Length: 132
Image 1: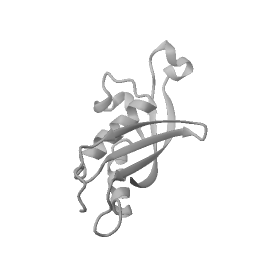
Image 2: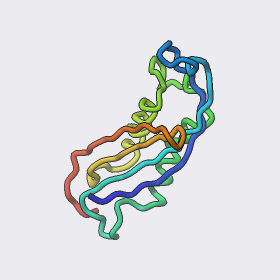
Image 3: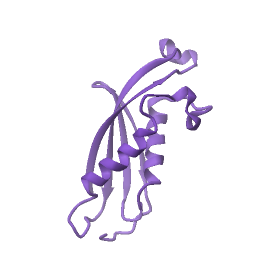
Image 4: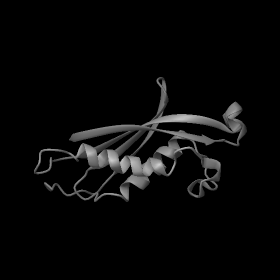
């Protein structure tokens, strides 16, 4: 399996209004390092998984919708606890709508809250083993 990973970061605000989250119940900021890995079984005719510039641009488009936003007020997070895991899934879902998933085996999104803690979400695609 071939992989290509690009990384960016996003600054958000949110609260996690449940006693389970202790002090994170209140409004607070977070800077999340976002790593996205595209996976495919075969390389393209240009011997790449995906063009690095294209992958970076797609990730940037998705993150632009979150940058400096309060997720408590973001329409896509209405009624959703915006945990790191939930944000990772949101990013994966948004990414998956911005490129042809057919030639890819899957997509992995990892959000790093700090060097010692991270969460992620993976999407498996029904892919054809096609060189594209």
